[in-house]
Length: 129
Image 1 (cartoon, rainbow, N blue to C red):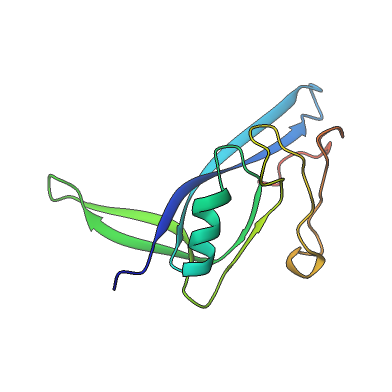
Image 2 (image 1 turned 135 degrees about the vertical axis):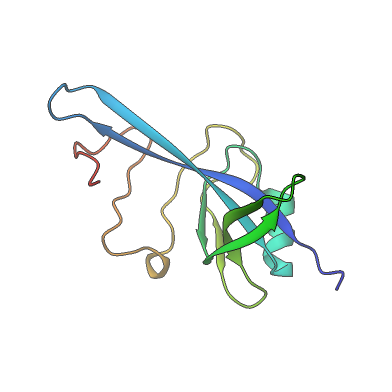
């Protein structure tokens, strides 16, 4: 339809200290994000750069496609539809790389979400899986 579509990969990282060894651990997971909302697409295109800190709310969708050999492949994405979804910039628009961190708005933050600033030690909990 000619509407803009923005897609990018987003990394989320978990930090914790192993209770038995005291060693700091980190796990990074990559997520595919697709934005069909024209307003949010313009914001992402203009202000989201590598290292930007974001709060994203959308639908998780898996789509099926075929690779060059004809094999079925599946891709799971966080999709911000035309009238649904949220994108909040958590860092200064002018900053890049290691940016100042802000909490998402209270209405957008789950009650159980633990926020930490750059200067705090990671939560000393083991991963719950």
